Length: 121
Image (tube, rainbow, N blue to C red; front, side, top):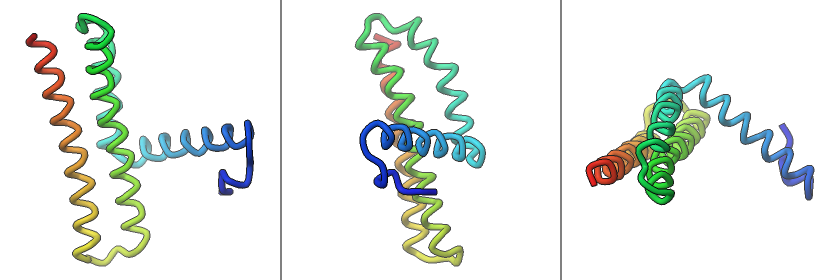
């Protein structure tokens, strides 16, 4: 796999987009949590469009769910790099993985709070 920096202009944009799609598809293939969160997204986005009272509410509802996907992708990257470095138990590896997991949990809490506040308003 080549570096996206070997290209410039439009070709770089095309390559960067290809790499992004590869990241999404690889994560979807290998991470059950990501597949569950994609399902959550497919269910909640139409609900957000229907229940959101205005554009700002819809944007908050949808972006809170998309944030979960973003954080899960970052967590998966942290886990992959940590596992690449070594599979033996190490306190720093555990800390990195636990921190990534905590970030996902906070994104889920964030989405829950936004949904509860907006839908009970």
